[in-house]
Length: 210
Image (cartoon, rainbow, N blue to C red; front, side):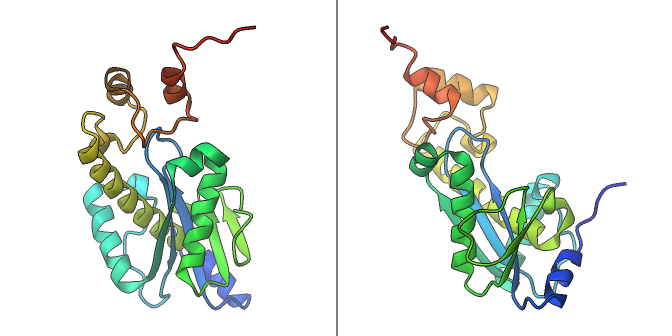
């Protein structure tokens, strides 16, 4: 039986004294191009839309519809960590940085429910990590939807600036077509140089002398 996201984690936090509870998720750890994007969403317990679930299990049209609803009816903040930051501090830390920025940008948050098994160390409030939280917790599911839609739009814009890599379809993930274009067209300023496929192309002609 499939797990259905519910509001039980939020209810527990509220019962323990929290007033403003937000769900936090990120998208974009796996791509070899583009930023990593996080969202923090604080739902109104009296106005929770139907269909909140892991964004990866939804159609694009459903994600777009729910993301628009959430921007209108919930407290939402989206934040990013840049390609340069990813290359400088590594993708895990950059993902956490984007999450920290999203929570800080949301303003009123005194407890955060965070997707994953690790909590970002710089969160501005107490938090709980939830493995597969985007499939279990409605606030995290909402954050996953908002983050996915926001990052996909960024990659569509970048695809217009750097045509040929198929980012409007692959969102920067290392698909066969994307890797082929990387070989044919070269590395762009928004490719992650610390990721192996990009690093290997940049340094394939360089040898290390003993």
